[in-house]
Amino acid sequence: MDPTQLRYSPTHEWLYLKDLTATVGISRFAVDQLTDLINIELPAVGTRLVRGKSFGEIESVKAVSDLYAPMSGEVTEVNTAVVDNVQLLADDPYELGWLIKLNVDDAAEFGELLDYEAYEKKLAEEAH
Image 1 (cartoon, rainbow, N blue to C red):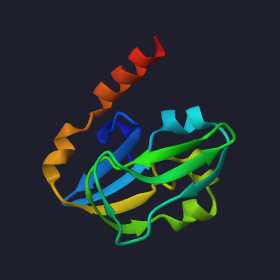
Image 2 (image 1 turned 180 degrees about the vertical axis):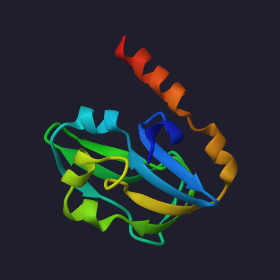
Image 3 (image 1 turned 30 degrees about the horizontal axis):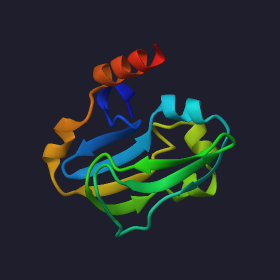
């Protein structure tokens, strides 16, 4: 996945949408902020997600952080490789480290996410 072609939530989840199937992960920035990842909990296939609500947790040596759904829909696939080896997420958050796939309820929610430029601007503003 090319990070410049993805959409982002303010809570650092990324989303790639093709037709009505979304692939969701977390950004390199989020991974770097968490540092040493220990564990990740993801929802089961069939779970209904609500945009903005927690769908799982990621644990690092620093803290446990919630993962938030960037769009509403039903989980159709979970990346069990990341559950088994969270280091995949640390090594490659955009390809091997994707987290879940879902069938989205409303494609219009996609337009409410940040494009790459807006996300990078948000990160720069937060740094000051």
